[in-house]
Image 1 (cartoon, helix red, strand yellow):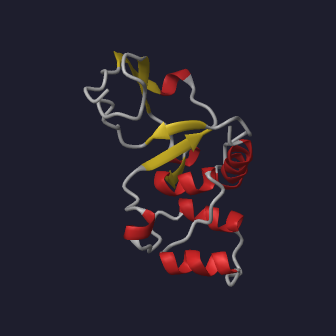
Image 2: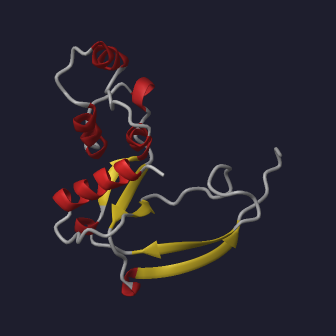
Length: 146
């Protein structure tokens, strides 16, 4: 599932992380999500949450909302006008080059079009055991909606 996009992310990690050795990406939440909300796991799923302490040089940060554009092989536009211009073939930037925008966390964008960049994710290639600070086991709640 998404092999081209994951290979692209690995290429980005190789170019941007000095200690990255080509491992498959490990995905990280930067901010602890509320696991009580729906959408993370099916209700009743047994899970483990790790709290880890990594050097920032070993983590590639990106905008989670915009990563979804990469996953869906879309153009990563900053606003609706730019998306329209890309669709018309007017822009000089390639779709793949636009994907690099997910790493520019200070980029000025139309938040009504792109999202507010509130959710950051990280990727790293390896987590050594001595970097694990806490291990929590939990079972997700069943949704009251279903």
